[in-house]
Every structure is written in C-alpha cells, then in structure tokens.
Image (cartoon, rainbow, N blue to C red):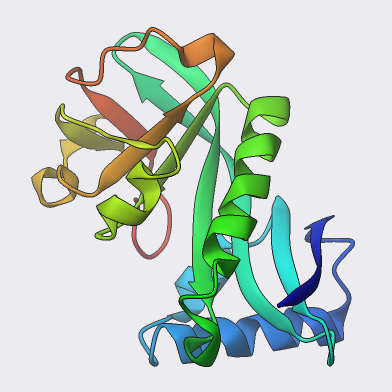
Length: 180
C-alpha cells in the first residue's frame, strides 16, 4: 500500500520527486504524455501517493488554477491534470486515495473542479458529474466551439458552484497543447 499521500505545490516538489512523477506519467500513459501535458501539471498543487518501501510515487494528480466560464459566470477553478497510477499498482485504490485528497483541496481552495477524461465511471464514483452542455475555448478574441470535447468534460461542484446548470455552455482559456 502507500506510506503517505503528500500535497505539495509545484515549487515545494523537489527536482528528484518531479522527475519520478514525470516518469510515472509517461509509463501510465504508455508514451502518450506530451511535453505540453507535463507543462499543464505545473503551477498549482500535486497530490502524490508514495510507496511504503521505496517512497517512490505510485499515484499522482495535479490541480492547477484556471478561469472557467459557465454561462455568464466566471469561476476560479481547480483543473485536474496528470491523474495516473503506476501500471503495476493499478486496482489497489491508489487513484481513489489521491482523488479523495484532490476533492478536499478543491473544496478548500476553489469554486469549481474541472477535468477532461474518457474514464467517466471512475470519477462519477467520486462525485464528479459529466458536463452536458456545449464546450468552448476562449482564444482571446472570441469563443471557439470544441464539440469534440463535449463528452469528456466533468465537474465537481463546490459551494460557490453548487447550483450551476450542467447543460449550459462552458469555456476555458486557450493554451498550448490540448485546451481542455
């Protein structure tokens, strides 16, 4: 099992631990984890489950601040990135352990939790809800429709966003790599 779950800002995370997390993400995503994906995990918090014996990271999620617009309301959102568990440790509850701590962080620090995924069932069991409305990216001058993302966005409502309409439009700011 794990010795501990640590919640650290990117700045508090030592370079060797960051390197180990980066390797974990490359392994878990089977090489489909780009430099942009890695960049997207920086600038916020990391929730890392460490192995009892080696203190090596075995599960990880990052939470980065992003401005998310829902209809006419802007939310300070915690955007969840880089959720992964070492392939040989999957099925042990480590992802759930990390995401439970992510939920606490979102409730404490943010107005809304947001992530993009194809693994809906995992997150639904943890209280996340599928976004049912259209998705957009704000490129700085206009909203650009991102219909291919419509089925992948999930939200975790926290006190300020308890009553949002899941069928309305949602948008994020554009960024390098995948916007969502």
